[in-house]
Length: 439
Image 1 (cartoon, rainbow, N blue to C red):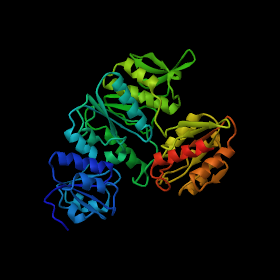
Image 2 (spheres, rainbow, N blue to C red):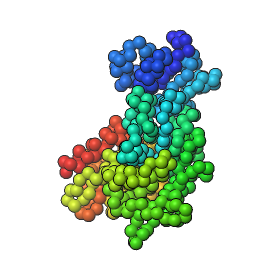
Image 3 (cartoon, helix red, strand yellow):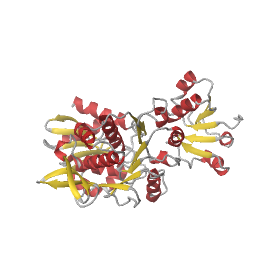
Image 4 (cartoon, rainbow, N blue to C red):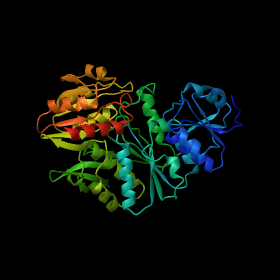
């Protein structure tokens, strides 16, 4: 055991942990960084750039942790980690990178979470802010760690995607606007119950800002200073309404419907994208963005990779990559958004999720399913359509292509994490696209 003289300890040498180490080193705050992997991928870079920072690998040393002045944990680590138990029991502060960010940030912050759509809404709102001529930094769980953004010139506003993992140990963010986009069962291998997961998501509503509520979500909470959005015509400050038999993004002002933009003017028009766009508009309204700038950004927005993205048409069959569909709710939205008969490719690491909600929507929209990955048998149990198993993505794509008819779609939307077979969801999506292009 090594005495550390009450230094800050960073747990995890991934992207987030390294960003925290770099930031604190710049602030001249002594740190130790540790990882329970023997050779974490970030170690060579750390040793090259900051040889003076002590690094410990191979285990989380509970004795070392009990001497820390504070512990910063990477999002992949639960605060229930056994090595943290002793430190927690003697009152040592355990925080997230987002909490560290909150202590130093000097510009307003918009915070975005939800089971699905976080990256899309974060990116779209960032483009709205840019369209308005404001200086913006976008990051968090999407792309650049929030703490790394503080090393850049201070913008007019920060737009952060924040995961439930990050919210667990975030206490003082105080965003000027925040949203829980939606809730569907996810990460049940981390949380004791769905109620625990929901409560963690709702931690984003901390502080005195304006809170955006999904009026269609049964788990939305009733809070003051809120703006709501809905896909229904009879509720929500921002909603979908029909004008002259045409669907419009709509704002309600003094009980009057103000049509903003025909849905057909959007590049992506699924119900999920409509909800995401309404949420972005509500957030933009909360921070006083000009409506014209927001609508220009909406018309220009073409979506993100691996999120129900069209890949190619082969033999009259459209292939869609929704590799980011890592939970049941996302896959349901993707199937409904395609709005045609499809062959679904699903499976992977289900993270303890209940797959039963897939049964009805798959029966209505998919005449067969090709399953991959470790939890394929669990998904198969709840499906009523023909099931085919594949040992690789190449095998899955070939089988799905042979099952699909002209005018139908092949949809990769796994409803599962990717780590049992791939590096991450991006890797899974790229492999899918490569196989499709070789058909």
